[in-house]
Length: 391
Ligand code: GLN
Image (cartoon, rainbow, N blue to C red):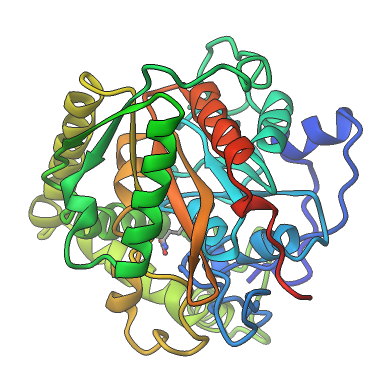
């Protein structure tokens, strides 16, 4: 739909990087309209994982993750609607931070699920992510959901010791869905945090499983309205020789969108339609509120929540493309963080059969500095983040 489209203006996040002297090396591949968990739905074809080129890099920001993991760039940006910074960061062995909703301006980002979307850094280290955050975070009057709250210097607290840090481990994140090798790597990482002075306790996020149906109603619903602007009139692709207006709309959208995008538009339109709105969209929004409350209750008791970023390591290209629901299930540990609007980070914490494992750290609203401090302290004590694939 947007092949050959050149944006007439710069996004706030990239403009701020340019103003600070960063150099843009290029655009990276991603799932079409950021819909996917593997970068296989890209119009330009799949991206490969540098740790095993038969495997997916995760998605949707797979190209950004690979650029950093393979050493092509020291840092990249991604957007995260349901995990698209954290999951590819985990699959490729890099650091990825999804900030609090509203912390980084969405101006100039293509809207997918506007109430969920958030841009953030994908880097080799938490320290690098802190430097990028210092540049991209902050209020932007051009994004009506941008938070008018002062930012902090994200590098200032990196060296703080973790003595007394209270970590919660949600028991629902360690259930049957979780691969044993990942469980082991996560528990090793937790031990490392204990030796750095943290205390650990089990907590519960009882509606974790319900984040999948809630998200896969809300995100497609928002996407179906956001994508209505791609109609062949204003910008992007237009079909050849339309016979009339309806023919132009229909063929432009049928020819311009890929299969996964069409699936989301159909699900979203259905969920928002008069007869089904109450049964699906309203229900999903009610669930979203409960999921947010679960997090708030948990975070009243602990400083941060830790668990796996993904239930398995990177799968092989083609393995899950025939079964969209199997692909959606892989987002189980990341979606709820977007539904609640909280910040979440994935940092490398080990390997399973040669493939990277990501530890997810979830914080309270606007606690990015604490997440980066935790990431930095872990990366000073371990060397998982400095291991490189053979490329
Ligand atoms: N995998 C999720 C989806 O397909 C999340 C994508 C994202 O965060 N952009 O919707």
